[in-house]
Structure formats: structure tokens, C-alpha cells
Amino acid sequence: MSVPAQWPVGQYDLIVLSDVLYFLSSADLNAVGRCVCRAVTEAGVVLLVNRLGDTDGPLASDQAAEAFITAASPRLRVDLQQPAHFYRLGLLCSRHR
Image (tube, rainbow, N blue to C red; front, top):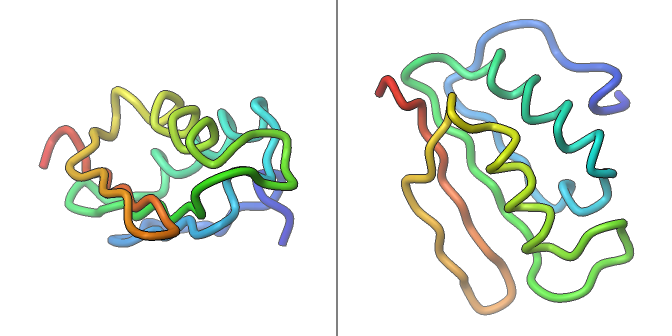
């Protein structure tokens, strides 16, 4: 599967994006944000897991996470952002939740 060109059909209570966002271009991040907003249920959550620091992708980890959060708003809001030892965790929920 090639994201965002291919996206699974359906509605999901949980969508996990782990160590993938920083491999996407800015345009693809915007497209993934739109796909996720369409696919997550009203009661669903989106979990972002990004390794901290430099990456081999077009964006640094924090830049990619922030770009996704921007692309997913206003449909999704950040409920939690927590840096861990090597990772940044983000939990996004529907604004209607």
C-alpha cells in the first residue's frame, strides 16, 4: 500500500501513525491528514508516534508531527503530546468527542 495514494476504505476507532510521517512530503502530509479525518470515527482517536531528532526524510520528526496536526485540524484536536526518551507521542481526538 502506498500512502496517501492508496488508503483503506472504512471508518476506524483507532488510527496509528508510527514512524511514517517524516518520510512524507508536505503535500503528502496534507493528503494523509485529509484521509485520516475522513477515516476516523467521531469517537475515534489518532495516535502519532515519531522518533525524536533528525530523520532521513524530507522533514524532521517534530516538523512532520506539527504539519500533520495542522492538516488534521479543525476536525481533530490534540489531547496529549508527550515527549518520551526517544519518541514523541501525540493523541488526537475528534473535536466532537
